[in-house]
Length: 198
Ligand SMILES: C[S@@+](CC[C@H](N)C(=O)[O-])C[C@H]1O[C@@H](n2cnc3c(N)ncnc32)[C@H](O)[C@@H]1O
Image (cartoon, rainbow, N blue to C red; front, side, top):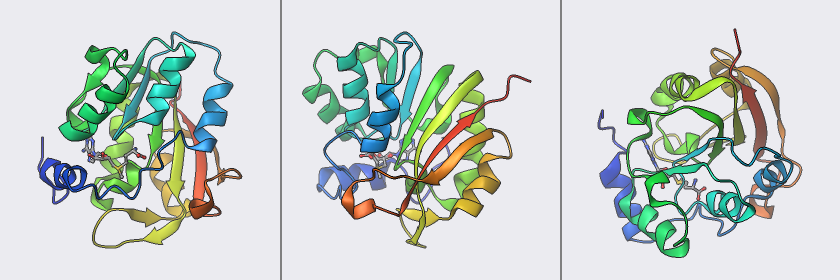
């Protein structure tokens, strides 16, 4: 794993000190709506940079049997495991996203992209591409806001994101979310990308 300025030490200290302002304490409403229309309960789902991962807990409660959570932070994942004792431990991955190996039908993005340095954005899209099965989807939310320039959360715009994502994936949708939580209203893009089948 390549150590960046915002690697394990940085995130572990955020979790240790309770500096987790990004944590909304519930499934993000746009993702909940998306999850609620999924029909295949056996599909393989990954949630990278998951933190306490309310989305994974929700999917698990609904009966999805192949949900994987991943985070650099041991503290975040311990919190997740404590809150979700019945979630399969072997599907909780304490590792760097860029080192992860697997094949997924669906990957959910929720304030993970903005946690990475802008210089890693191209690698993020390449890694997502390599983790998705052909026809698999990357779905989630991105901040439509410049945010911070020198530390997470790093922001951006639709034009910039389209540029990165369309390099490897088919962008099916990228629009302002209509059901964001109040503090993020008008500042979040909901997107769906598909890995082409060839
Ligand atoms: C801003 S938080 C978002 C957490 C969660 N998605 C949420 O919305 O509450 C970013 C998370 O990504 C994790 N993270 C940062 N870089 C990572 C990497 N390279 N691989 C895996 N996890 C990473 C951090 O530990 C942190 O828990």
